[in-house]
Length: 455
Length: 65
Image (cartoon, rainbow over all chains, first blue to last red; front, side, top):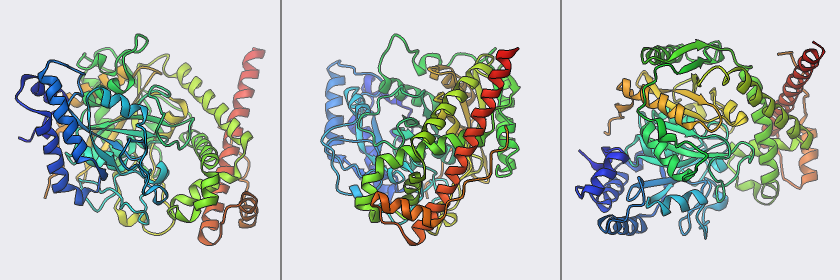
């Protein structure tokens, strides 16, 4: 058994009892990257030398009795939208192909302070906007379940690296579903925490009102643990891992089934898988009741206006200076915000606030969490994305960037060998309950333990 | 939700004028795609406006009651 098959929790125990070293674990990751990443294309920059130095330092500290916490000595990787000092950070774009930040993003600083070993940078759609694009310096990451299929995005490399067994956890970002949709398409866990929980300094902004940082991980417990390390200890916040392992009896979940089942774009088999997951949760003692939400198109209209108004403002000068260096798919998505003004943005932000209030009043006053789908299809083949125009794939993620509620994507089955994710959404600040539910479900099935075959 | 008014359709000439004013080079397929997306986002603003009006009406009714 490779040490990479150990969860972070089990690896951490072995690091402490001396049966595993961080150097061995890091070298195993580097070896697997060397073996597999020509196919997965998850990494866009590797930092092998510094990773081995950091892992040796972690071993010395652990042997000397200094314990920095659950990520101490654990190799992780970082989405290429997030700055890493001394390591190229291109934001997925030709424009920044040679960019080497001087400082770490705050989440990277915190992970290093917690003893994590940074292996390298993971592929992202250009500036986190849309993809896959084939005219960037970095070919899009491939889905390890079927390498001629896309991963979803924008955290494409993060999901590919985790499901491909290259790392157990990755620091990623989500503005409209960029953590949860690749998690769903690749069969891993993605946690978009409550808005404003993780610091965004040093992460390339796409739309500040909707940007969230969070982990993509192999299991719910590892996502919760990664989030807790990045969020830091606080008396006001219950740890995301604080309720992991507690029974689910008596919890109340509103099931927003019509919200995706009535959409002609939703694969019927996906409805069946999420229904099965709802039944499984019911067997675990959860009280499930179908609920109606405001039209998904309304959330998407709000999110779309906010993303495009804010991202155009951020990119305006760069579009004028280096517009020809943007990928053909990305450029129009940034440029189209030119038709939106401050008053449009103001209306969208006002509606976003109203929608969050509406969900709190009508849903989260009655239920501990909401259950729905993450993506309405399984991963699509790259051939569906040829041509200059981008293709938007149907999903139900943007709503919770708009409202800021925490949302967790958890694998809930397979269709024709490709994974499907369900989404569990919680009250503001309550990552703990959604992780409790996700973990309880995960432990009650073997879905999460099925991994793509290598060769 | 109420049906919003018809989408505010933008033409490539409208977008070309805006991009010229912003000093951003835009032509060909990029102009066509930008115009399509921009029209879609203008339609989204109509959807949002309709939702806010509906809420305002509901709040007014609730106050009267």
